[in-house]
Image (cartoon, rainbow, N blue to C red):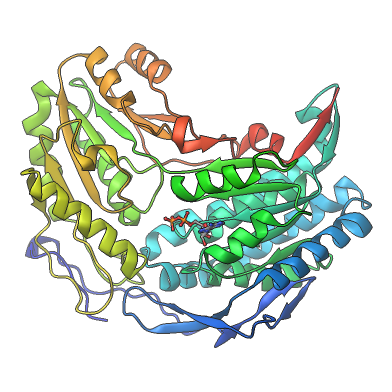
Length: 487
Ligand code: ADP
């Protein structure tokens, strides 16, 4: 595929594409139920495409209610007959084995992730896949130590967990969900997002190779109706959902009054705040990382930038300079910073927000780079002097679009940053530790990064306030969502 570097010749690099020759992708993928791949009972398959060139990569089975029922039954049987019977240390061995196999096959996973989802290989290779392995390693260590995680309490698994994940971090989200569930002794039915099912299905193959007892992990593919069937299935004990706030609210309504436990990780509209004493270059790099890498397809993306007035013009200048050096193009190229937008539908959503912001009369800056003819692409975009009332300061865009606002005082920026229905994450850039503590304790966000952004670790809980959801993933807090505690 033709590389689309920026027009700025200074930054042009020779193409360095990752070879996909050794990657094995089948033409057709069935459902993973009870340890075996099975054709969907409705015999329907849907294509999964490479968003960078619109070519069909494979066909994915569409699970209907009957298939979901079979998967839940398989998970229940495995829970009752095997997983709840074996020792905790034995469970840990399986998790360690899965972690090691992910590491061994990391390169293949990274390439498939970039082909199916559009993200730059640098991200999938250096972030997604290593973190997925790290989640299994971390939780493997907890399996036989749950009584230390929750001292003086009787710790029991919940049973069967239904898990629904989005398309922005496909394998990593699967790991975030599956690893703690298994560590705590539950079995799982996981539904990946319809545009990015491939690495979850490759994970199913890996799980077979790891010898995990049949039915402990089941993977059903499909779109919203498949997810709904899982949510509504009467024999599921817990639903863990990551996705849009709208679907999260629907799920919460449908589970109201049932015995099922629920955790939701939903949208965000994170504030990244630069104070006048910050190291500007470091902050600019963090802002770029927070919103443009991964095409802004991150629920904790730093999509609102608040800059203290005295440094606003300097930050603006350096930000635009750095944006001009970003390389947009082939996700499999190791030099690429910005890959493809995940789907045609998502590109249309992003473009509609850009159009609305232009209509509001906001000043736009867009990197002037060529984009490939085929595929779904959006140039890194920023809007300056955005008002609090602007649609791009209020709503989640899930694309590489940054809304910049300025402020004078700390109280003002805290008010502005908290003035959102979301509360997932935030970032603070300053030289003074006291200011970090002041801001981090007053920002209503589940995660606040200081002098860095988008840093993840399995030991550290992640999750939101307000319409960003409830419950935490990662760390001991994340395990809590998969156990019953009796004092
Ligand atoms: P996004 O906007 O990030 O695509 P969605 O909330 O639409 O977020 O999708 C996240 C996940 O939820 C996907 O796996 C999707 O298939 C699933 N999903 C969509 N609609 C429903 C629904 N009504 N019930 C359960 N899951 C759903």
